[in-house]
Length: 140
Length: 176
Image: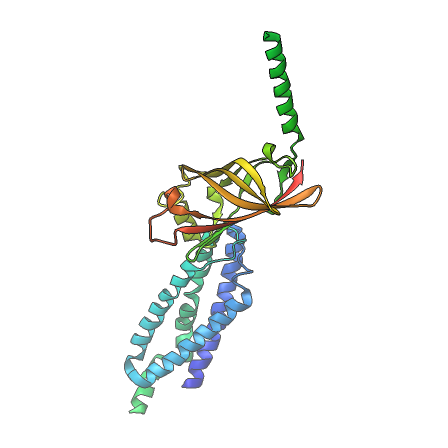
């Protein structure tokens, strides 16, 4: 199961990163506020992949501990943690030559939710709903 | 007698006019840097303008009359910028500019000392601070660094952030 969960994390991370980069392009084009020197494309992609891999590892650890209740706890935890990560985005201090820093949270805050979206959307492909239950039963 | 007084007055006015005319006027360049900082906050003001008349050999006729656009404040954080412009701090809507008008400039060793009225947040106080002038012929750079107490100008509340704000100013200029 760990292999599938990790693969889910990697694929979801790449998907979330791609979505974030597309969002950045659209945001920059529509508002004219270019923060690509601060939120670098490589950094965005890497953050999404690392975030989703950590989520996958978390899911695996939770599954070992909670068995059948893993999904309920994990989904809630992942969503709450995603919300929590937006706090530093509001407090971010940009370089003083950055134009319109007030537009920065509007760029990065939606990106903080792309990993959780990507992971949950792809989850049924990599982990069938019964997997958790079956594995839980087998573990007993 | 009346003719004598008139002649003397004309002479004085002409002398004053000549003295002023002899003072070099400087055009403020675009790469100026106005920063403020303390342990809690830091940032820059992006818009600075005014008139600078400065002659190292004629300090009596030299004068600074400059202003900073409060709305151009940038702390690097959008929320903090809005907070700084709010009524609790600079109240940019009511007091959109910070002004400094010099009254006296003296030489102190290799540098200079300027005394003048600094108006922030509608409060005017006389301050003195040292500055340097790097003369490069057709151009030059004024530089100064000094501290103001924000509570003297009724900016913010006591205890929110450190009271003393260090201002660092670097203004490149070109001869007019």
